[in-house]
Image (cartoon, rainbow, N blue to C red; front, side, top):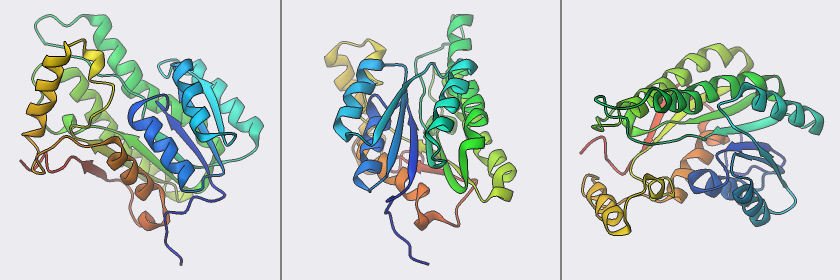
Length: 253
């Protein structure tokens, strides 16, 4: 069997594709020869920009992953295209603090709706249009295993993602569909800018994160993308049901 990272002739779907890790990963799949790419996100302007980078192989779909109807509409579009999916990177997620003392119910519900419910009903809707032998990668986080004070709800959502990967690996094994989760550590992405911190404070925050990593720096989205492509490739044909940390040694610090 020839083992490589060549995605020529394969059809890929990436959620959270308008920016950050999702956008970089979509570009990496395109560079590896993917025949078509479904780019899914709530940010329509970001989707348009991401698709422009890839060209005609990219198809965009604006969706709120917290809404089941959005997943059903996406699945209908994929069905119309008539090209079953070979690889899925379910990456869409949100991140903000939820201190136990005063986190609002709405914030709690939104984190679970996007990070947990979105994955469940997203894969459920798409599953009839996923090819046997395909690969599914769920974007988790080292927060599932490492304590982030004030972020308990986010951490809980990512622990649920890891559980999904193990459970779905069992459920989909008869179809030879591999399911794994991937846990980025501190990665330089636009998600941190959404915390609303002043630039000086944000730089200090990112610098402090780098000091907690064995490799002594914050990671790059390209390094996460490389791991996603590995898990979706023939090189990982005997890997399913795991969580792969891409954290520069953050969990081992």
